[in-house]
Length: 320
Ligand code: PMV
Image (tube, rainbow, N blue to C red; front, side):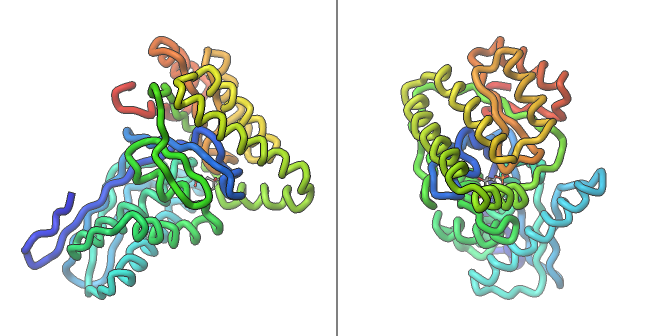
């Protein structure tokens, strides 16, 4: 909601949320379709005030170890880029601006944190100047930051962290996805930093090394996403789960899985999940499991925590 007022110092706020890719990460970079759901229990809000001198971005990220510290530093830089790109777009040059980001999407976990931070900042800053960004304008601003974060972003995260419902994303376009009955999804964090840019580079290198093999894997992932769209429209979660399992095997063959992800995928499957896979860039980060009932949700959640998950989030607030 716009919070621009008549007071001297303009204020504005913007909200975004985490996303989870249910099918098609990496293959989406090559123009294939992907399906993503919003994780509304993980929200971010950016608040802007303009006063004083010098710009300041305050983010909620903390560093507990060296690797996370590097991630936190990168997120801080990306936030500053989001701020300066938005001001440039608005043709505003204030003497001082403070952006305070609150809420928490763990950074570098495949949950779209960098896109969510950029999207919330772009929205908050423009609202502070009485401008409501169009969907395309906001997308372009987020993409300008995502290009710094990981080179050749498909654009999926930019939409998935702002759209309130599930999306079908293909060739730079996001459309609302028709879902007959909400799938019960759990997102689990390995607690280990993921490396999206490195993972995208690895898939590219594998492709250059062996084009027919990688193209066959990407084509199969594309077909899985296509068919999963039908499963969701028809509410067939068993068939959807089987496609998630196969998508995970493809991602493993593409070299973007990691042992902690494998442990969580196995633990959730052993506990009765209908399907499970890594989500996002990989090489760490999060996995997503599909469960068939509320009872299975409790069992799978406990199994994930026992297998070392640092956090487990339901994809919808009401499922917690
Ligand atoms: O790790 P995340 O949340 O940035 O997701 C990356 C998804 C990829 O398909 C691997 C890259 C992309 O640009 O779509």
